[in-house]
Image (tube, rainbow, N blue to C red):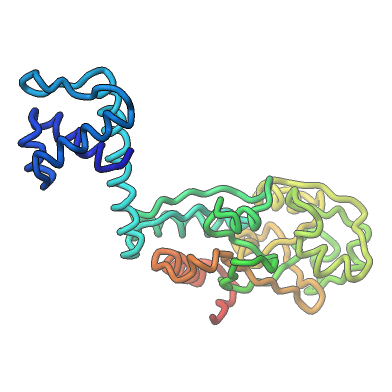
Length: 304
């Protein structure tokens, strides 16, 4: 069965005659009749009650009309969406993040982006319970915010910005009198982290593990504000981006120290290479950079 058969049947139903149906779809009456007979021969059943006025459909014909009413609008809508995508006005942007504290700036960026690109289908999920980069490679996602780029075929990494990791301690903590902290000084501390693997945490990967140091104890918290509350009450220390700590430093709840001579991290937008030139993708990246530069303290925008 071809799409042309479904279009012909709908034209017959809508006009009530083969003659008017032929005019509507720019065919001759004989061509319309030929299509109907061809379809009846393929299905080995009658589709039309030709002797009725207007022409009516048999039960088999009604089934085909129902199929036409379902399929043809979907085809038309899909073709329209493809044309919008080609024109750069529509598409799909399913986003995941591998950075807990990124919620602070990503959600406002998404809300602002929706206003400029209403035809782009936006969806958002955290990447904490699955591996988002392989999902991106398999087209299950369209963009991943990550600080841990992994070489994957067909995946490109666009730098967003750099930030410095800082150690947050209570203003009453003995380390609060210092501006720097070294790995050995954390051996007797309780380290509060997000509930992710150690290998995905910068303080372990870039600071503690290279020095062969482990903290005395660890505990986890889901939210940044919970981590800050625990630190402020003297229940441990935590490592967070400088921009995530800014508002709490201004309230004199905590003190922030450099990790050694400084541990800096680059945050990337991972995108499938085939989508990299899409206007709506490029605009999301540029608007996210602008939003972060305006609202986050202590970051450095990466040049591309």
